[in-house]
Image (tube, rainbow, N blue to C red):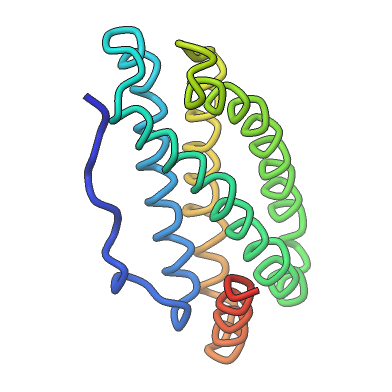
Length: 174
């Protein structure tokens, strides 16, 4: 069965604590990755069911909308401040930006397959692509949570974090 554990509570993080918000986004990505991981086997066994359609719609919506916003939060708001405060962090920031580009390219290919299944035009997914996307995203989140976010916690002031949170919030209102 496809996983259906609830997402983190909306009260768990807010734009008042933008680094916690980024972590909450990571938790959501991991939930969708768990669904993607199980999806090929579920499709093989059950075919396209209402559960599959609901899962696909959620995955597509998240990675089409929230995923790009999350990357923008990091690249436009967090990275410039970290680069300014710790110029030696630039290699880390570049690595993570390249990871974003790689994930976006993988998502583009996987998205086409998910849309075809959702439209009833295909009955299966490329297991290798979906597994590679899941593994790459998990490694990316690990990279950010073990290197990027601790650095941000260490270097950024309360005022800078407030500024990031305000910008993140505004991005979602646009």
